[in-house]
Amino acid sequence: MTTHRIRMGDGRVEARSSDELRADILAGTEDAADRGRIPALTEQERDYLFDLFAFRGRIVGVEPGHEVVLTDDGVAGSLWTDQGDSGVGVPVSREQAIRLFERAFGFDTAELGHPDYSYKPVKPVVANEQQCMESVLLSTIIPVYYGAMPNLATYARPDGPFGNPSDLMPLGRIADARAAQLEAAEACTRDMIYVGKKMAAAGADGLNFDTTASAGDAEFLATLQAIEELAASTHLSIQVGMAAEFVLGMHGEVEFRGERLAGLYPHQQVKLVEKAGASVFGPVVNTNTRKSGPWNVARAVTFVKACSEAASIPIHANVGMGVGGVPMCETPPVDAVTRASAAMVEIGRVDGL
Amino acid sequence: MAHVLASGMGGIRTAGDLVARMQLHRKMRLPQAKAYVAEKLRVGIDDLSDVVLMRELREDLDIGVVTAMPGAARGLAAKARIERLLGIEIASVRMLRAKLEAEL
Image 1: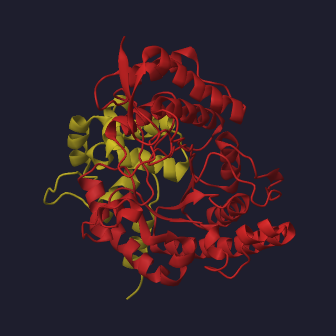
Image 2: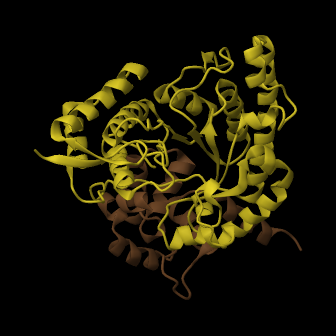
Image 3: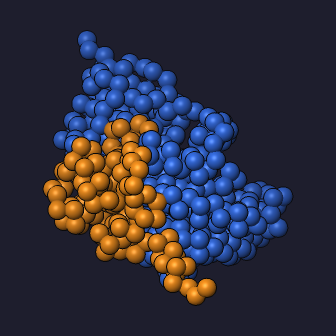
């Protein structure tokens, strides 16, 4: 009996028979179809995934001519940061790191980010970020984003001035928890607009909101409102990368342009991001570490394909550690990453990664 | 890096940065962005990710090449030429023009 070497969602190597491999792929796409109320992958698409995972070579890729644009979330920082940022601790400056990614590694775009990668801590040191951006733009050719996370949780006590919904909700103080989230969202929007306008003044090509809606629907609202203002008042190309496939209803009742944000999946999220004025949308599908790589990739590609079909702006799927079908482990294996990468392009029809 | 090898266009090794700019500046989906850039470069769409062809073309157009060639446009100079080539405005180039045109 032929067995196939596959990775699990936590990176472990396991074996699957051909029948088991096909069953995993089918189960993954059906899970996404059921949750998102979207079409499952066709038999032809499932066959493509089977061939991808049955191929015995380490590295796979897209067909020549099918290549896509790469954007990132400050990945140049992975040269000089610590383990917490998936970094390898090589002491290069941010300017040098970005030039390495442009010239040595062949990236299509780059992103400048602060080591404390959230908008709230960047605000008081934004002048330093501006001068670094200006320095980077002098010597680079590829488009350069400035990126950070909305990270609404940093606005709640003890880190911030507002009430903490995680403390209030277990006490049954739902109304107070909701009010605290909206107050924090207002401050978060203000900070993101402030930093965004400073980056526009520095000449940045774009602004990235990374892990959007990590704290749920109120954070998504804060980000959409910031996008509206920045898209209308600056030249910035705005990219939105989500935190999860599903917007958590931590508030439950916030709306943007008449649409409730809680419970939205990528094919629904993208429509609101478009309305707000963003240029690029990065859907996220979280990896289930208890399921196989083929299951996770089939599931992720199903969500992203639906998102791509619904979108009118470019879709740059998040395909990294723990998302987009890639295993959740510190050093994502190239066999797993290249399979997820190719699947997202050939089946997911993404415009970038 | 895995993505670069598996699926990436290749940045300034090819036309990856140019296609990226059309996505960022004009919100073009990938096929539209590739078609636009291919027309401006007068090449086929499949040629956009051909490192051999694009290396020579980028040198001819002086829009930035990946190897460190003395005299080749880099940074803002390359971006200024890319602006003209693609018919877009790049903020950092606009800001340089403003500095140059401002009175002393």
